[in-house]
Image (cartoon, rainbow, N blue to C red; front, side, top):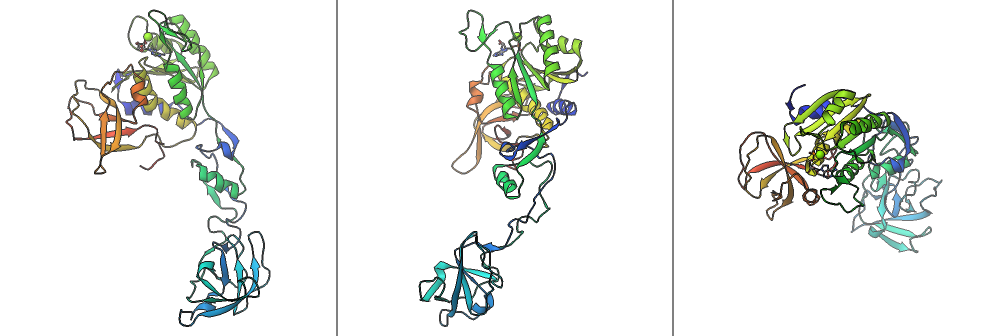
Length: 418
Ligand code: AMP
Ligand code: MG
């Protein structure tokens, strides 16, 4: 096992060790944001019949071919058809039908003219009236065609597609009320550290609250997984071995935080090695060099560092893609934007550095990125107030204000084509 690997190698390694979970069927309302596990087909044409897109008059376009303001064409209104009704008769030359939005186009009609441009010659515009037109109508004007969006039996959502909120409406229209999708991963989240207390408790001397488990459980949920926060694990080999063994048995994916470095009380590496296969320990990035990954009892086990920002970046960059692959997603990269640095950034660590930052547009419409002043890896609040991470590449090259830098957006979906 190599000592330190790149972030790309780490991500590929973890991705290579997970696969899509079994398929379950969910109601389309619960399918939003999830991946279709099969092609979905409409049972009918969408729309089922040609209909009017406007309130107006259904006409034979040929009747109006010579219409002009100087010599308008007059037609007889022979019927009225509302949405939900059908007009069974046909349209003879010189006739038109008053029609509402959504009503089927009568046989022989081939265009709809909206109310606003039709003059009433006699009557009230209802059947029995005479109306006038002072311009020709284009063939099929204001007509929504049958099968415009889909034909009966046609695939409307392909396997692998992520269903959006509009997609739910599309599926409903196609008579599809349930969707097969990949099961959400059940993820155990365990904090390691004898200094940790539950957040409900005011810490006594030397203790701190376990905030990581909450952030990581929230990250799991945001990634589509189902998190369970396990009890805090003290810094002992035995306690950690027992917790990891049980979690690997009961969950699809195990995440720990803390105890990932080389201190006297850091046990995640020896424990994974003892219980299973240790595949990775160190990634060339900052924050979060100590990233442990292995397989225990067939289950992926990921040991994040204890520092909050280090744990967060490790989750975002490596674990999130894995949880997404388990749910059938095929996009693993958050969108990136190139922006102007708001200030000088010195580099004195050769690792790739993720600067917690705020991206905005200046008055000229250019993207500017402002790295937070405090880049301590111990802070969650800074990330809460950031919307991206600016990436200082490997090496020791510092950057000056105004120079261009790549930023990875947080909280923008991987599928986004930004
Ligand atoms: P470690 O990776 O165990 O060496 O921890 C690094 C730093 O992160 C230490 O200051 C820990 O106290 C802190 N830390 C570890 N676990 C947590 C946690 N669950 N919540 C908040 N801070 C933590
Ligand atoms: Mg520790």
